[in-house]
Length: 471
Image 1 (cartoon, helix red, strand yellow):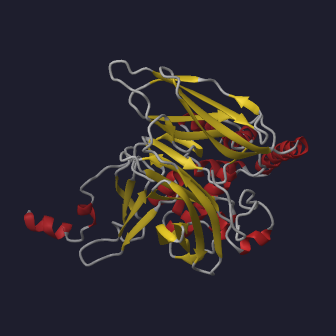
Image 2: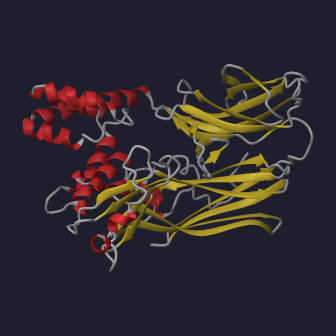
Image 3: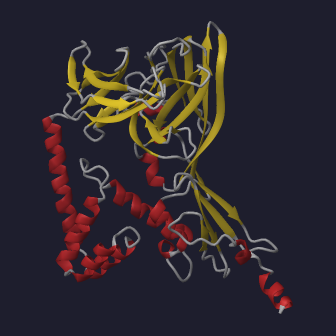
């Protein structure tokens, strides 16, 4: 559905394999994909999916951590006529310097409407700190959704699909769909999630009927290598959403095509779409080395804890009190020294997001946040991780936005933290009520936290004087 057409090819095969040589990072490797969907007016609604590695950007220190500024541009043309342009300067904030070296993707979605036809597209990302740039050229094929007969949208491949009713470019029809622009899966990401829409289903409210969904995978030669269970659905309208996920961990490393076929049961009419993807699987030797590394990693971690004092083990467990269960607290309290060491090893292993690697990224991230909290939120009386801001940071991670309000003539200093993905968007308000730099949680719109809608009265310096005058 999409093919690269230029020598610029700053993504080349490298864009599929981020983890190649260091020279790649002299530019910004991009991955770009797209999918088209029908609008209510039979127009084509086009979503462009862009991703690149965070560590391809240059970050500079700021008061709140580290900041990168980059320009994301896109142009879609046909016969030298421009149909869509996008040019926006974006800022990405990171609180922890260690995160700037990890292989984490930044993802963006651009949207537009296009008439039927063939188009040329160009996406570019420019680092405004050092001028480094990446470009990706591609072709778009936009179908005519006004034509009669059963039709499918393009297939959007995804890393994860979950229910979410909030407003976001990542959300459609009550689902949060994380795009996978490189269309790559592996044994650590073995589930191929997909989303599509079917249009012009023959439908009558009195006798709605059914439609059948078939999914299967073919190799480069068109041979079917995997089939998945056929599903039959009741028609609710003339359009329908098709969403699912198939575990493909048994595939060998190669390029494949995912096929989605929809058949109307009453008329026999059918339509299908295909989407190319890549599956990467390490060799047995590589897996063996990974297992050995994991086993060695566990022994090293246990040896580390057995070499600490019991007081140090208690101190570490105290630091994770925000993320452990009541049962875990009860169990840890009952253990002897060796039992506590074993407990901490298992505690972190259960929370390891990628057990196939010797590193525990979750543990590393958690203690990086503790270090940041101690460096940023500590007072003369309390370590930063023990403060309200420290607790919120450790439980929910870095906020998407921090709004700082210094002390004013009529108000005490306060901060508003915003989390865009927490219950559809939640805020946390912290205020320095005593003037010693200890910002207390005054209010939050998150359902599990303190809720005081009249929090503003707490930060007004004139409160005491007004109250005394009214007595």
